[in-house]
Image 1 (cartoon, rainbow, N blue to C red):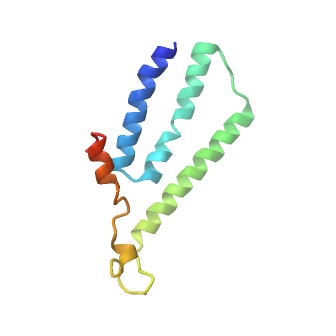
Image 2 (image 1 turned 120 degrees about the vertical axis):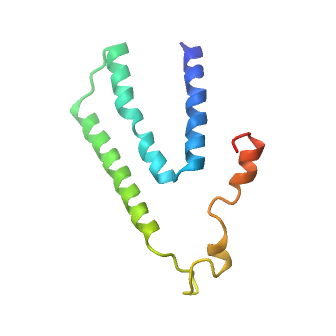
Image 3 (image 1 turned 60 degrees about the vertical axis):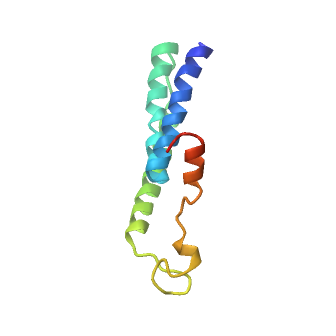
Length: 113
C-alpha cells in the first residue's frame, strides 16, 4: 500500500510543480482543492466512510474562499499596475523585475525547463 502511495504521489507532486510553473498560482491552487471530492469518493469506496454535514459545510467554505481569491486576483491583474512613484509600471526597479525571477535557474537545475 505504501509503495502504491509513493508511485502515485511522486508524479502528482511533479505535475503540481509543473502546473505552478506554467500558470498562475492562485488559479492552480483553486484546482488543487479538487482533491477533496476525490478523497471523499475514495474514502467511501475503499473504506466505507460517510462524511457528515459539517464536513460538507467546511468544504464549501474552502472552495468559496478559493474561488473568491482567484476572482479577486484576476480583477487585480486586469487593472494597470502603477509604480510607487506614480509613473507607469516598470518605471522603477521594484516593478521592472519579473515576479518569478529565480524560477529559470531552479527549473534548469531540476530539469523542469
